[in-house]
Image (cartoon, rainbow, N blue to C red; front, side, top):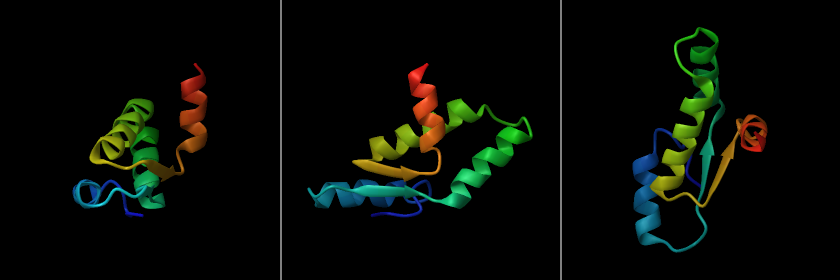
Length: 79
């Protein structure tokens, strides 16, 4: 597991290049709070930024992402 996920996407990529085991990334509470606060202040589009961050973590090489955004993303994917 690599944490924090956003700050260590380069590490996720390097681990993926050297290891074939399942790789998890933990999108920690500080990363979650940063996005929520920016969205609450109207500075960003929460849904777009959240999906972009999670897709970036996945593209870096994570097989699994542990995130506080899971309930929100589950609802967005139902739409």
